[in-house]
Every structure is written in C-alpha cells, then in structure tokens.
Image (cartoon, rainbow, N blue to C red; front, top):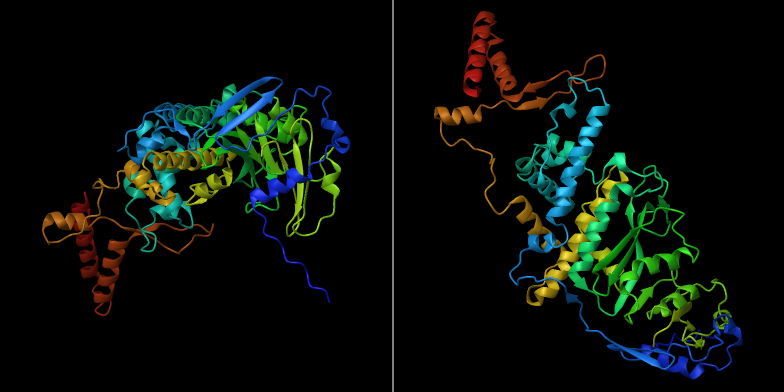
Length: 517
C-alpha cells in the first residue's frame, strides 16, 4: 500500500521564484488579455515601500510608509472619549437628536393615544441624553443579561447601580422606540437605505479625514444579524449569523475601516459585475496611488484586475476557477506542493498550487477586514430589534467607530496599548460618569431616627401571582404593608380580637402614610 506523499511547506519567496521560472512566453491560452499595443503593460515590483508602474516610457514612483498617517492632531494624553469623538462628533449627535425628536412628533401625530399609553410621557431629548443612551447601549454589550428589562430589575442576581441611575427603563425604551437618523417624509421611493444613508456618509467622512491609509488595503463583507422582514436581507449558510444585512468594508492591514457600503439588493451592479463594482466604489478615493487591494474569491476577477490597473492600483486575491476567460492553468491537475502559473502582457498573473486542496489566485503585484470584524465582535452592543436600521446604526456607531478609535489610540500611544474590552470600559466610564459618585445612591438606614425611618419606609411593590378571570395580574402589593398585615394577623388570630386588630392595622397605615409623604 503506497503511502501518501507529505505536504510540502512552501514559503512566499519560493512560490514567487517558481512562478517566475514557469512563466511561458506563449499567451495563446490567455489571449483575452493580449494587448495589441505591447508598449502598454504593467510591471509589478518586488519592493514593498517603493512601487513603480510603467506605462509606455513614462514611469511613476509611489512611496508609502509602513504605518498609516494621522490627518488630525491628537494630544498624547487624549482620553477614550476624545478618540471616540473623532468619529462620533457633536454634529452626528445633533443629527440623532433632531431626527429622533422629529420622528417622535410624526409618530405621535398619526396615532390616537389612550390615557394609559406610555407615549404620552414622551418629552424631547437632547445631546446629553442621547450620549448617555449610547453609553448604556455600549454597557449592555459588556454586561449581557437575558432581556432588556433585567437591567433595571431589583432581583439580587440582576440588580446593578448603573442603568437605573442613568435613566429609567421607561425613558430608555421610549428613546429606543423613536431613535432615528433621517426624515421619513423626505424618503425617496427607490432608496432602500435612506434611513441610514446620511448617518453612514457622515461617519465615513470622519473615518477618511482622520487617517491616511498605508499601501495594503482589503475589501470584504461583514454581516449584521437580522431576521425580520426586509427585501435586501441576505442568507449565507456558511456564516455564524445566517440571516442579516450585508456590509461591504474597505479596511487597512491594521483593521482600520476607511469606507462602508450597505448592500441593498439587486440594482447595485453597473454592468461590470457586483464584485468589481463594489471594489471600485469603495476604493475610489484611493486609486492612482500605487496601492494594493486584497480581496477574496467573491470579488477577484480579470475585469477587476484590468479596472484597477487602469487606475494604477494592484490586485491580489484568491480566485474562483469557474470565472470566465481564465487561462488553462486553472484546469491543471497538480500533486501536493506543485505550482503552476501564467502571466499576460498586462502583468496579470494567474497561479495555482496544490496544498491540502487546489488554491487559485490572481495577482498584479509580486490582510485587514477580518481583524476589524474580530475586534467589533467582542462585547457587541447589537441587540434584537424589529427595525433593521437600528441594528445597522448600532454596528457602525458603537462597533466600527469604537474599533477605529481604539486603533488610533494604540497607534498614537504605542507605549500604552489597550485591548478592545479595556477601551470600551474606559469609554463607558467617561460617557456615563461611572468614576464619579452616582446621583441616586441606595440609602441604607443606620439609626432609628425619624429621618432614617422615613427613608427605610418607602413602599416596595411586590408582584403577585394572583390573576383575574381575564388572566391578568390583579395588582401589585406593597411589600412592607403586606408583611406587617400578615404579622398582625398571626398575632391576633388566636384571640379573635377583631376590633383591636382593625385598630392596629389602621394605625400602621396612618404611620406609613405619614413617613412616606
């Protein structure tokens, strides 16, 4: 019985060397890219920091630094909130305040409210309250509880001194209900992402204005989980969240996000293919600078390689063998460790090698969004919602923006690098003021004076399990009053002194009313 040959370990240099040795001068199988003008071709360079492109007799030189550069001045002692404010500026907070109040007015004017409706308690919000609201959402990402109401629960296992001291549960739920980012009355019929378009544009502009990208950039997609009814909801069985809204991102090698595009379904293709259109749209500001775009097999194609070369930009990515007009090398059967490749006159190399399985790639030059997704997934504040734009906004406001702020912090202060959870904690502490004494601390009586007696005699409502004929809870009883009544009943029931019992209960009720009010 013959043993299986061992898989060879091949380094990058040996791959390039063997590809160059195997390049053939016969381009007949790659004729789709043969150019009649032999003077127009692209010569890839082996240098990482000095990229040269040759078009005819004109030669350009591009020089990149190993690290991205800052476009804004950042003090060395900047706090986590100051880094966060680079992207979530006062302008964005004011936009959320404006559209949230506008949405509340529009909703309340359309419905006839009952006397018991909680919407009657709505009052316009402001920038301070919206910032606290965002801080609570981030805190809820760090502290996971079964449901939203548990953050305000008085049960011992859920009780905390954060949520209730920032705002009441009813107020939080009201803001969450009316939270908005655009004017519904101005929405065009053919714009599916109008509800978040303005918000995303402003945040992306802040991303691009803060950092200058390095040479390598990556394009890939991420998904915001969502199972509600939505025309452009995507189903991808291989993902952790099978249903959701797809976001295309352009990232640097360090995970910093420079551009975001929401996939709104069919109609985004401009005739070049969806993958090519997405890459060209995301990278439009960074073309003609000799950069290299890294993609996976969803985007990589010969059309994209040519389009980027025309804009003096390289492409490196894995390739699907069923793409049209590929050379014959993609159909070759290889043994483990074997490599084969072919290059056309434009400098596009298609290579195939055998590892555990066949791997095919395309390159015009001899990684970052996964890191962005990884950092954003830690303590994610994205929660269940019936409104898709809430989930997208939460992902960008409190996911991508926070990750970008962390990256800028670590680049600006390399001697004091933080992990994503540490940065979130510092940011939440600043937004919610958790480092300072809270306004409403729980008071514990330490004496039997009248002041302490009044403090300790507040009514404590206790839910009952009794239900009426309509299967509703009858009422909530005051825990203290009920306890005293039961004690008195146990004391006087054996003697059957009903009048004395009634008098004692009446006196106790009078004392409780006096101490509370």
